[in-house]
Figure 1 (cartoon, rainbow, N blue to C red):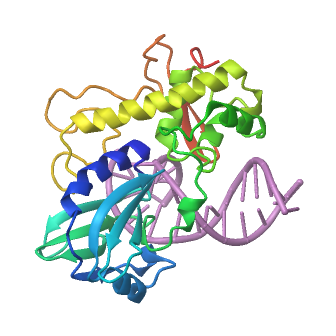
Figure 2 (cartoon, chains in turn orange, yellow, green):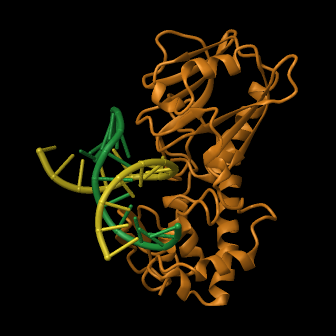
Length: 283
DNA sequence: CACCATGTTCCTTG
DNA sequence: CCAAGGAACATGGT
């Protein structure tokens, strides 16, 4: 799925587009993505409400809407799962394949489309309350981070995916972050030296910031049916030759040379997911 | 056909 | 009770 940087760029894109738009109707094709909210509950909460803003928490999108005669805002929570997309589009038929929910805003729809339906569009915010600190905010402090690592024997790569430790890191950026920090994905969390925990803390922020900045400079197609994908993990040329440069340092580069030392990048499996690293630069 | 894929939750095991 | 591991979810690409 889109990880923190991709969700951040998406939210920045959507925010001005939906502000002050009022929900006219809600169409649901996959009730599963609403759970535990029901279709009726979603409709009752949203129809007539007006979008006031959108923000991000970890990999979640948080939409705020206001209702007339009510002070408390409605919170709509979105999550992209592995393959989800949120985009604003002029109403048309047929709707894109795998459209799960369409929030009708007059002539346009806010569409949530998801090939695998692992994502969410729900009123239930309980998952957000379980998240750890935002890595790019001042809530993410070195000391508590280092102490939390001391309490786990899990390999550091697996630990970075724990959303209660720090919110928003996924499988791709976990490998990228460890490469920048020069730490092997296999090291048990508790075995990291203080200097390594500190370096890791810095690498988390550096890599995520860099990815957000990158996403802010690239022309993106958020609907995903144009030539350029709105999810921008892969910095390699998508179509005809252009100025894209390789952006990911190790992810999905098994056998290719390390950008620092030239040794072949290794792929290993941890917690049933791929990790990529340089055995020389990440001892 | 086999295996792989950006994530989270639930169940089992120790 | 807790941590850790694995399956399940659903579809598509190679």
